[in-house]
Structure formats: C-alpha cells, structure tokens
Length: 488
Image 1 (cartoon, helix red, strand yellow):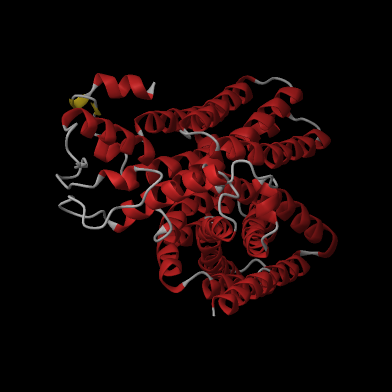
Image 2 (image 1 turned 60 degrees about the vertical axis):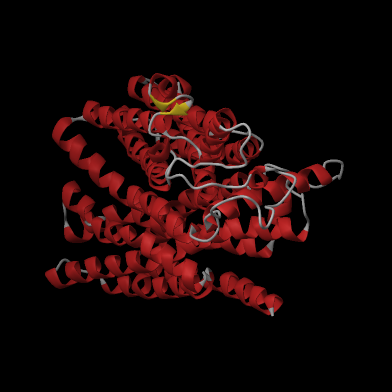
C-alpha cells in the first residue's frame, strides 16, 4: 500500500512524493505517538465490557490473558523486527491486529469473545510499543534520543490517564457505539499515517538509486534537503569515509552517526556470523544496567496503574463524586506528562542518573502525604488534587531517561562484544523487554493497591506505594554509579 502511494505521486522520476516530509523526524515521531495513544485509548473500550455483566472471574481472567499476550508476544515481535530489513511489515501487522481486536470486541456477545479480543489487543500492544520505539532510535540516533523518547512516552502516560476520562464522558453522553467509533477512527488515522511514513533507511535507499541513475560517473550524493554532495564511501558498508575525497561538503553529525553505525554493525555481523552466542534477549538480561532500567519503568507504570485502579473509587466513596467528577481528577496527573520532551532533553544534556533517582525519590513524598486526605471537605479535595499534580510532575522524571538508556545499553554491549547481536542489532528486543516490564506493571499495580485498600485502608496503601517508589531509586543509583567508576 505504501508503495502504491509513492508511485502515484512523485516530484521526480523514482523519487517518492514528499519524501523529505514523510521521512522527517517529526512525522515519524507523530506516527509513533498516535499509535501508542491509539492502543491506550482502546484500553478504555474494554472497560465498557461491564455491560456484558460477565462474572468477576471472567473479568480477572481476561486481564490475565492480556498481560500474558504482551509478555509472550513482545520478545517474539522484537526478534522479528530486528531481523527485518524494513520494520513496516511488523508495524502494519500490529495495527491491523488492533483493528481486528476492536471490531471483535464491538460485536462480541459472549465472554469468550472478549477473551479473544483481549488476546489480540495484547499482541498488537507488543508490536506497537516494541517496533514503534525501535523506529525512534533508528530515526534520531543516540545524541537526542532522550528528548524524542520523552515525547513518545508522554503520549503513553497521557493516554493511560486520560483514556478513562474520555471514555467515561463519551459513554455517558452518547453511549457505547460512540466509544467504539472513536476507537476505530483513531486506528484508521494511525494506519493512514503509517502508509505515508517512510523509514530513514528506506529514504536513503531511494536517494542512492537516484544518484546512481542520474550521475553514474560521479562520486557525489545529493540529499532531498539541498544539493549537498557526499562521498560514495560513506555508503559502503565495508569501508569508512575517505579523508580528502571529492565531496564538496561533509555529512551532518546525525547522518554520519547513522551511516557509521550501520557500517559497523554489518561488518561485525559478517565477521562473527559463525560464532555461537546466546539469544539477544538473554544477553540483554545479563546487563545489570538494563535490569535497573526495567525496574525503574516497572515502578513508574505500577504507580500510574494504581491510580487507574483505586483513585476513582476513593473519590466516589470519600467525596461522593459522580463518575464525571471522578474522571476529571485524572487530569491532575495527566497534564504534567506533557513535559516529557523537556525531561528527555535534560537527560540528553545531564545524563539520566540523577534525574531518574530524583524522580523515584520525590514521587514518594506526595504518595505518602496522600494519607492526609480522609474526609469530605474542600480543603482535602484541593489537597488531593495538588498532591496528584505533584506526583505527575515527579513520575515524568523517570520514564524518559530510563527508556533512552536502553538504547545505550545495546550499543555498549555491541562495543564490548562486536557482532554479538548480528547486523540487525537488538534495539527492538530491548524495547520488547521494556514493554514486558510495562505489561507486568499494569497487572501488578491495580491488584497490589486494590488488595491493600480492601484489607488495610487508603492510608496503608499510600504509605506502601511511597516506599515502593523509593525502591526504584536504589538500583538506578547503584548501576549509574558503577558505570561512572568504570568510565574513570
């Protein structure tokens, strides 16, 4: 489908229509963000499964199926994506699986159909997060990955919190069909965006063909942005750029890093093709630094999922709010998530160490202070809103630096053992583990917090979650400290 669009519109022979825009960093980022938000928006549709009045056991089983599908599907999707020359096929598959899951849920009349729908949704989530985040690394490289990862994951945090609110409002005003239509509309938009998006490596391939056709006897390489000229040796996977070549201008830093990384990865893969090695996922799990990052995101998402599970019920029973008011309070946590790009940018400049540690430590303060909210008064309502806002501001300090650090772990592993991941690398598989950690957290947070509230009360739950937040700072501090000592 993408090729059909490209052939129908072109501004030059063999050059796809709007190639520069369709392969730009901003357009690729927007496509990934919409995909992540679409998945989380579909999550709210499942909440309307209560109208089926299925047994509570079925409800718990369906959630377990969803988590299991992500945990099993993510490593498989990551392995396939890393060994594919074009991530588009895997990405398209995830979007169409999500569309099928939404359609199945919309027409389901029995509990077992909800189970199948939830299974498909888990598989689609495995693809969207794993391949989407790997695409970002392919696009922007290491230097600014924190800022871009912060932007993408802001849509994740924002969607996780805002989806119940949007779903509740639309469901109350227009009914279930309207919620279902919103979900399908988002999926269609995302599919269209992905059809128009062109990966960086694919864009470079088009440009190389144009150069070969137009100037067979030249050593120049013109980009779609201007008439810059590059040496052919920069695109030879077996040799570096030749100093003093006939190029009139040099590559930009980002383009040079991308090309050199591809060249090194290909050369290492060929040199070590006969070497026996562990599966990339197992190799990644041997890195303490990666394990610390996975635990950090586990803590972050567990706390967000906790609010999704217990906050609405708490304000209804304590403040006697209706469903709309209970949904609006989630804005206090969602709004700070928009600062993700800023946090990511700071992580690129200052490093992830103290930002991550500060996020875990500071989040404990508003969580523990929530125990002071205990009666139906204006003062306590305002206090809860302020504490939730503060919690949102501190949680955003965790996710972007931790996610960006995963790509660094992959690169350092490759430097330690050249060719260990093969020519395709292991970015998608690293983010598959990231996705598994998030899935486990969405199951753990509501169950753990719900059990505490039911058995010991609101105060015990907030204290326990505050302590749990502090535990995220321990492995992060230890691993980053060890890294700094090693660098010295």
